[in-house]
Image (cartoon, rainbow, N blue to C red):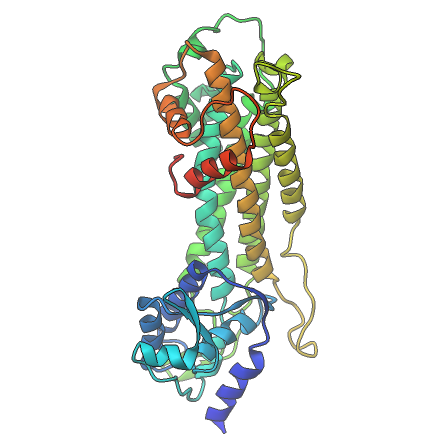
Length: 427
C-alpha cells in the first residue's frame, strides 16, 4: 500500500484555510521545493521535479491557503495543497483564472502526478512556505529600508538638522558595521545641500534623537536584516524534508530538518527591524509638523486654522506604527504541541513570516507619508535647495504629487508615493 499511502498523506494533510498565498510567494515556494529535492537526498524521481519546473515556467500557480502550518513537521498543510494540484485534485491559477488542476494540467500538456513510495513525504515535509514568505518580506524590507534612509535625510534638511552626527569619526569608534554604513549614506545624500550650509552657525546645540541617532538606530536595523538574510540564504539552499536518503552508503535517516526554528528566529529579527524603522520615521514626521521643533509652518500648511495640512496623515502613521509594534511581538517563542504530542515542539515560523508582509504594508505607507511631509518641508525652504541627490528624489515625488497648497484628500497622494517605494524608485 506504499503508493496509496502517499496519496492519503497528501489528501489528509490538505487542511489549510484562509486567503490564498500571493502568486509571487507560491512561485518562490515551487522554486525552493524543486531546488531542495534536486539535491538528491529526498528519495524522489526527477520526473516529479520536472513537473514542478514545468508548472513554474508556465506560470501555473497552485492555490495554497495561507493558514494551517505551525512550522514543523515542515509546512505540511500548505505544501499538501501544492502537491494536490500536481495530482490533479486541487486548483491552479493560470492566465489570470482559477481552474481545477486536472483541466489546467491538460492545458499545459501534463498528466497528473502518480506518487510513488516516499514521494508524498518528500513533497509534504520541508520549510519552503515559511522560507518563501520570509524571503518575500526580506526583499520588501530591503527596498523600504532604502526609502526610509532617504526620507530620513530629507527630513534632516527640511527640519534644519545638522549633518555633524554623521561624521565618520563618530561611527568608526562605535565599530558597528550597520551604523558605519548608514552614516555614510546620510553623508552622501546630504552632501552639497544649500539648506545645510545656510544654518551652520545656528543656535541649536543638538538635534532630537530621531534626527541625530539615525545611524545608530537604522544601522542596528540593517545589522538585523543582514543576520536574517544570512539565515534565509542558508535555508533557501537547504534540504529540509524527512527522512533523508544518503545514496553513498544507502542510509535512510530520520531527523528534524523540517523544524523551521531558524526561519522563525529570522522572521522575528525582521519584525523588530521593520517596527523600529517605522517607529523612528513616525517620530521624524511628528517633528516636522511641530513648528517649535521644525521651525516650519504648523502642520506644514501656510494657512493654518482653515487648513489641517499634515495633521491627520501623522495620525494615520501613528496608527500603523502602533499596529506594527504589536505585530512585532516574538512569534518564535510560541509552541503548541500537535500530533498527539509526537510533535511536541513547533516553530510557528509560517505565521512569524506571514505577518511580516502586513508589517511591510504598514511601513511602506508610513515612509510614503514622511516622504510627502519632508518634500513639503523642502518646498518651504526654497529658494534654498537641498542636495542634488535629494532634489532628484523630491522631483520624482512632485511628478506624482503636487505641493499641498490647501487641504485635499491625502489617500491618493500616499498611494502614489507608496507605489514609488514598491517599485524601487525611491532608492
